[in-house]
Length: 332
Image 1 (cartoon, rainbow, N blue to C red):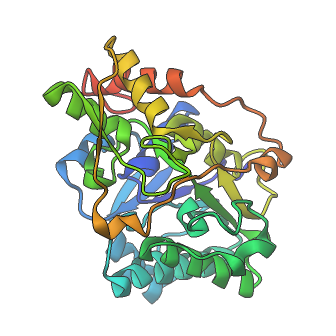
Image 2 (image 1 turned 60 degrees about the horizontal axis):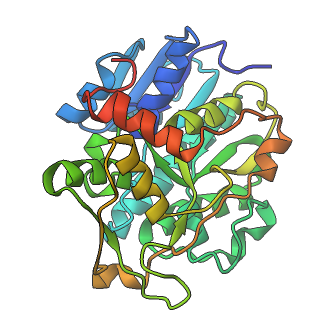
C-alpha cells in the first residue's frame, strides 16, 4: 500500500535531493506537497521554479509551530525528512547536533505519534573509513566510527532511533555519493561532476586529489556514485511498494568506481580527451578521507526494489548534456 496517496511533507525541499524528490513526485502527478527549507538562495529558487507543491514554510517556523501545536498543519501521510546541514567539513558540532539530530528526533516522534510514514536521510558518512564494513544491518550500528562531525551527527540519530525502538517503524536512508541536477547551491559540497564541468570550461583540465595511502594510486580512490534520479526513485520506493519496510538502508549503485573513471566519463560527455592533474589534499582532510565506499544494496533489493541503475557513463552524460551545458534544473 502506498503512503503517497495523502498529503506529503518534504523538508529540505529546495535542496538537492529534496527538490529532485518533488520533481519525481510531480512526475507521478502528485502536488499535494508541503515544503520546508532554510533561506531560499537564488540557486535554491531556481530548483523550485518548475516544481509544483501546495505550500512552502521556513523550517524554523514549521518547527516552532508544531512544538506549540502538534496538529497545527493537519495530517500527513508521509514525511520525507531530507533537510540537514550536509557539509562534511562543518566544525560547529552544537549546530550539527541541533540541526541534524534534535530536529530529526522531534520530527520522527511527531510522525510516529500520528501514524505518519517517516523516511529520513542518514548518510554513508556514518561508515567512516569502512573498516567496520558498509552493510546496513541494524545490529552493526554501535561499531561504526564516522570520520567527521557531519557523519557523527547522522550516526547519533540512527543510534537513538535504534535505542528508542523506532527503527522497525521508520526508514533511514544511507545515501552514498549522489550527483546530478539541482546541486549548484551546495558550494564545496557539490559533486565532482559539477565542479569538474566548471574546471574544464575554465582550464581544460580536472584536478583530483593525490592518494596518501600506498595501496591506492592517485585518482584510484573509489566511491559508490549514485545518480540523483536513481536516488529519488529508491527513496519513493519506501513510500510505495516498500512501505512496510523499516530500518536502515544503503542507497547506492552497489559498485565502487575510481575518481579517474568518473572524470574520464565527464570528458567523454563533452567530446574531449581526458586531461587530469593530481593535486594535494588539504591537510585537514587527509585523516578524514574515505578511500573506498561501496553500498551493499542486498537489503534494498529484498524490499522489492528491482529497478536497474543508470550506468555511470550514461548518468554523467545525461547530467552534463541535458542540465549543466544548457544550465537547466529538473523539470525546467
